[in-house]
Amino acid sequence: MKILITGAGGFIGKNLIATLRGKHELFEYHHATGLKTLEKYCQEYEFVFHLAGVNRPENLDEYTTGNEHFTAKLVTFLERADNPCPIVFTSSIQVELDNPYGRSKLAAEKILSEHSARTVIYRLPNVFGKWCRPNYNSAIATFCFNAARGLPLKVNEPAREMTLVYIDDVIAEFLRVLNGDEPQSIPTYKKNLQELADLIQSFSQCRADLSIPDQNDELTKKLYATYQSYLPEENFSYALKMHSDERGSFSEFVRTSGQGQFSANVIKPHITKGNHWHHSKHEKFLVVSGEGIIRFRNIFSDKIFEYKISGECHEVVEIPPGYTHSIENTGEADMTVIIWANENFNPAAPDTYFLKVSPHE
Image (cartoon, rainbow, N blue to C red; front, side, top):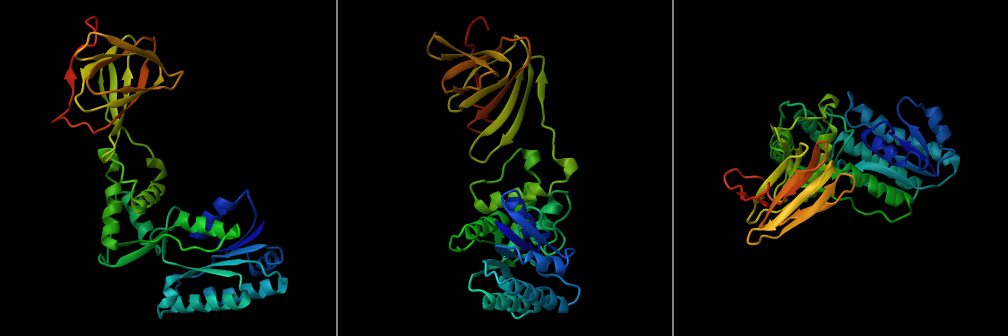
């Protein structure tokens, strides 16, 4: 399909283009393109996403020229092409307010609706997500940018409630309409500015305490993804604390809220670790390199069970409560084991009790 996208260089435009590129023929219009090229595009289109607009001009008159007058010019080009194809227009919830921006968007809505009954209008609130410009007109983008760099988050109106939509939800709705489905409402979220600032600021502590924000909460999950997209490129990685000795090393990787923790255990050749059991704690072991044997014994039995493990065959071994267990590296290279435990380690109550699996260990 041949798709015309105005505002192609903007936040929403970039996300839409990234989704459609390679699947459709795109005609991308932005300020540098020029009206002659736009008129040519209007002769070939099969679908229009009209995303262009002005929202923070230096001169208030630019609201009218950038929103109302530009939309009128676009409609003139479309009518000359005599091709009444569908149009999706990104308006704003500010059309309900008596301000220059809202009035200019409302005027653009009217022009498009009179042009074609196939116009779909979305009055968007504050849209957030990757590639939104910080320190411009998005509090979320600015909060994420600053928090990712250890900069202070300035909140001018802490009690002001924000209505938010996530960019991926917006694009998903656009794709539905592009595919011929009826328009639907886009999921919205509401929080005040101070709550948003505090939540985003908390993300900057995740590396230090190895935590993961609550991914069961949709807004938190989407805000955290947005925060991650603002990390400085030179700061994508971070070191973990390694507990090392002659046997190898152990590093906690991720601690979750209520879902346990992940760790990496490196075991030197011919070394055995473990020889302990738990009352309630249970674990999952996954060997990703090397080879060895995991041994188990019910603490009230003498019978030993063995499981051979290898990085050549990814197999999870469960470590149940009430079984003393050990893991031996039987190879000539380091063995690396990824471990999930059902609870975060608490040194005050470790639930770990020394007991050899075999008298030979």
